[in-house]
Length: 350
Image (tube, rainbow, N blue to C red):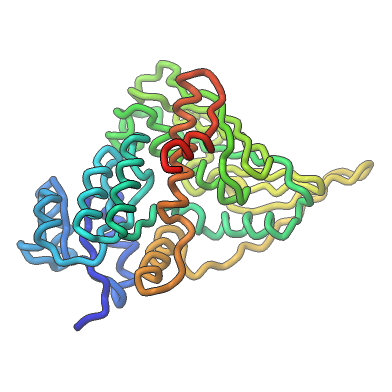
């Protein structure tokens, strides 16, 4: 009998295709896809053929897959609006879950997934692949070494030119809160990662300036207090017509009592220190090496967890805090007031 973990894959096109063809293959000695769900039959055929799946391992309805596939875990890579159906179904089928971010596209659905996972006693990890890239690991390790002294605050910027309709994938241009739900959830989680703390309060706004590219909100600016008393500022723009800080090229700046760490789109981490009457010195830090980068790091962590290893950093109990930050940001904009994220989370799950 094989020791490989058996995966039921929900989703086959778009990002899911990347999972099937790039993220999973390096782990073929530890896992195998034994079932595939996809509503588009041409995509199901193409990816099913790539995986060498039989016809009885291919499904257009996830309910059929849950009842017929003998698997150990379920991977969910479909639009967030369908995460609740997939995750609750997987939990009720007794499957551990590896899901793309966000947990879901509404706070209500996030809590429904949380409750179902806890009730079933299954494991769940949420993909926050941006934590585990060389550029971010270099920045994180430099900050943890105290190179800037006592940290004061952190700045984060995401900016991408999606002014052409559907440039960011069709559904993202049609949904509400497109920047926050599909983009900022990565960056908010990164702020938690880099500060080593959770969000205490968040204030700011999301909006659409009237650009036809998006139906929903596509620009945002927010300020946060963290539970360790650091402050953070976030700028997100899906209509950026100037300097780009798009995916895997976001800008971060950590400012402290002895200097600042800066990471920009060139992927270099620099330590800046001001010397009175002499000016600013700049030191480029060597990039750290990683065994697995991004998504592959997540897959490795999840499989190791299923194999009896340590709990990964971005399990459901941790990522629900990033989700509270995300939906707190939506609340803050709608109410035009600061939102207590800690209280929001505590009132929901204790």
